[in-house]
Image (cartoon, rainbow, N blue to C red; front, side):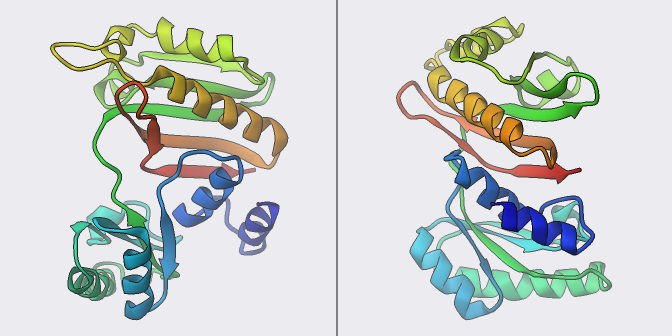
Length: 230
C-alpha cells in the first residue's frame, strides 16, 4: 500500500488514480468493486471475463478530472465485443477531446448495482487531525449539508451514532415501501476508513462517493473513490 503512495509522490502527483485508490482501500478490506487496469484490448477483455459482466470502462489519466466530459466512461458492457469496442472508443474520444492528456490505461471495473447512495469521507484538519464524515448522497450533501462528523479514531458506537444523527436518517430505516438499509455495513466501512487515515499520515482526504447501500444483510459497496495525499 505504501508503495502505491510512494509511486504517486515520485511522479509529483498528489491525487491517486482510481485504481490506486482502490488498491489502498482494499488493503484495509474496504468493499471496493472488482477492477483491473488494462493497457490493450486483449487485456481489457480478459479482465472483463474474469470480473464478470456487466462492467464499466474508464480512462485512467492524471490530466483528466471529469472523465465523462471527454467520453472517457462507458457503462453497462455485457460482452467481450462490447468491451473491445468501448476500449477503442474511449481512446478515440480522449485523443479528440483531450489530446494532451497522459493516458495510463483503461480501468475495467465491476458495474456496481444501484442502491441508496451515501457518502463517507475523511479530511485531515490542521488542529484536530483526521475527521470522518457521513451523509446521504446527492442533494442531502450538496445542497442541505446534512452530514455528521467525528474526530478519528471512532468506535462502533460513534459510527452508529453518526448514521442515526443526520436529519435524513429515516430514509435508511425504510421509506415509502423501501426496505431498511444495511447500517451495520456502513458502520463497518466508517470504522475501516477511520483506521486507514489514522495509520497512514500521508493521506489528506478520502472521498467515497457514492457508496451504494443495499437492504439489511446485503451490505454496501464503494462505487467510486478519491484519495488525496499530503
